[in-house]
Length: 498
Image (cartoon, rainbow, N blue to C red; front, side):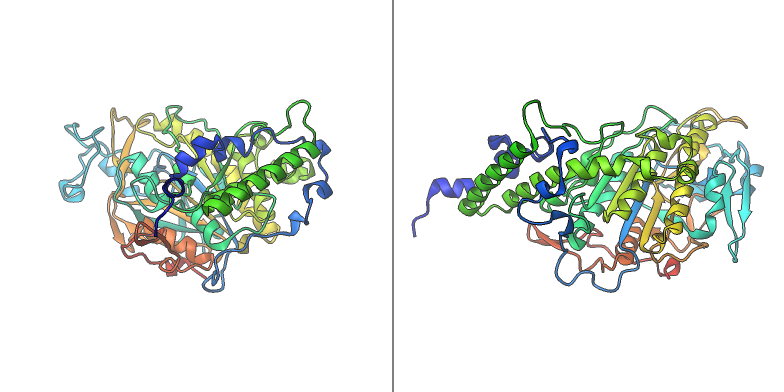
């Protein structure tokens, strides 16, 4: 049978080619020239049905089992927090000040190019005091840098034995966010959106916030692939809300365009796209239609979301003074709680500036001050509203820090290089056992000596708490059943689960 070569060519166009030719890229066109919320009524939003009541379902058969959490908030500390200055207390190191890290401890492990040329690897004990907080068990050590988090430590589960193979920032953060060090894979939030769907039709299922920071200003870049859809359909990519007072660009209609005109334009565009879909059968055309409609509805939902006028003074004060400044970590944490209330499936905050190669004495306290009170307030706020039991909160970075000093060492200041062999993360709520410590490192916080947890295990645990078997959540791509956790073994951390 003879085929139509033009039709065949069109069907084989890549997404990039298709969008480029049509000048209809999702990121710009879907959110440009949106209408003014002051003239938008719910009746006009829904020209054919009540959109506020529609919920996008997930895959058939999901969740695989009864979930302990309905949604998740991931507080990601981009740059790698120093575990031995925050959570992994190592008092014996004070006797090792300025002594060389024993070769038996390093054991030939990989070094970065930033310290591989050092002639010495002098031990830098933490200059910060630690306090042991009773959790009804062995106790949980927390640095003086985090007094507010210490006050909610009974709600947390520390995992002090996380490790990864990646030693440089970009592959490491790509690895933990997408399950692979190489770009092109779907992010954790995209997998959750794909598998579980949305509980709110007027906000995205997956939202990303990138709050400001006060530590080291030369921070690592954040690439959109960290919240990208990869090989999944584009409707599952994360939507980033900008910092500042205008979270979505082009939120208002241009001059001369009213709400009814915008509605007619979208209807006409939808009809054209539907014709193209009927002709070519490209599922991404359907995704584009849904993105336009989502952008239309976000005109009302985003301003309502970001308006904190209905928050009590006591709640605002609990997040700290920065809560009134859009784009800060405090403001972002409160937005994360508000999004969770509204059914947003996954909220991820990327707080940059945790790359303390030098000047820990100044930069690390600033970073901790940014996140300490807001993170603790988020835990309390969720609990007071009855949301913590069904909301999983995760805190962590892409790898840890070395016990030896990078650069000049003094008692009052030092720096630490990248260290993938062990670092600390914590979880709370959403089916996580409170007040437990899992895993142990050696006295140098250099090697895991009990209960190692790979970053695949962390991702498997997150999926598990939301009712997903990580081995059964797959997507066929390039002839393979792709998974967030890849082809190597991964195990949810049962010891920290309720």
